[in-house]
Each structure stands twice: as C-alpha cells, then as structure tokens.
Length: 37
Image (cartoon, rainbow, N blue to C red):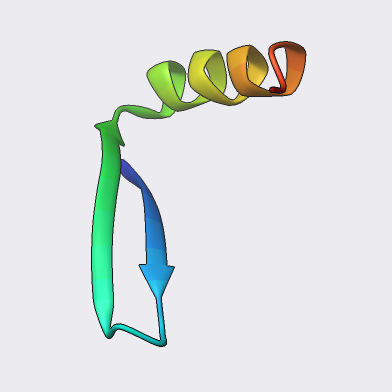
C-alpha cells in the first residue's frame, strides 16, 4: 500500500489524500502528471 499525503508544518496538520495499491498509485500519479492545474 502507498499513501499520498499533504503535510502542513505551520498548522501541524497531516492530510491523507489517497491510500492505494501500487498499481492504483501508478494510475494516480500518471493522472496527476497529465492533468496539472
């Protein structure tokens, strides 16, 4: 399993965006690389 998270050090917060298998992680990273905002 892999975790994609955002850590805000100023506010001392940890946000989990996704918990995924290795295959799903590869799909998510490919999606985010191709669909930058």
